[in-house]
Length: 125
Image (cartoon, rainbow, N blue to C red; front, side):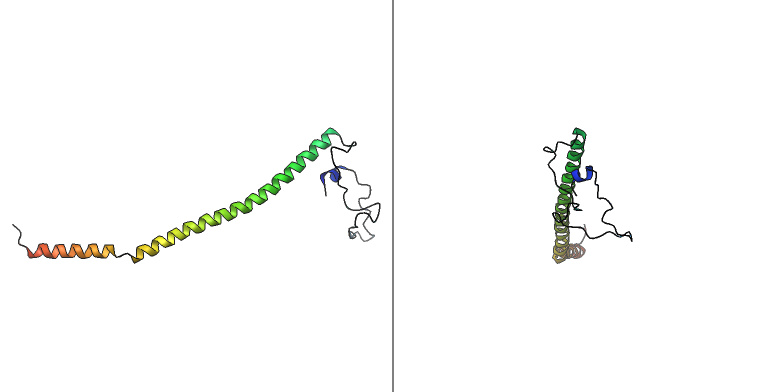
């Protein structure tokens, strides 16, 4: 439904209901003069619209555009956040993997023990 059709009074509202109160299936445009579908209009060419109605339509259309942009940006932001998180977790995991492979602390401990053993063998003055 367009904004312009929401502003126009509809004479056929409730005409599609049966006696049970259920809504009938929507009709396709062009089949009946009382189509359930809204007619798309150009607000600049519509002489019946007041200036206030045109402003309301422009604001509503701008809000719809913003919502569409926000939806696209939300998807992009989600993908960017997941990508950054994956890179950070990858770096974190790789760092732990590499540190677990390094034996430099073991070598330092062996050197300290050798130095202590050497110091114990030499007489102290």
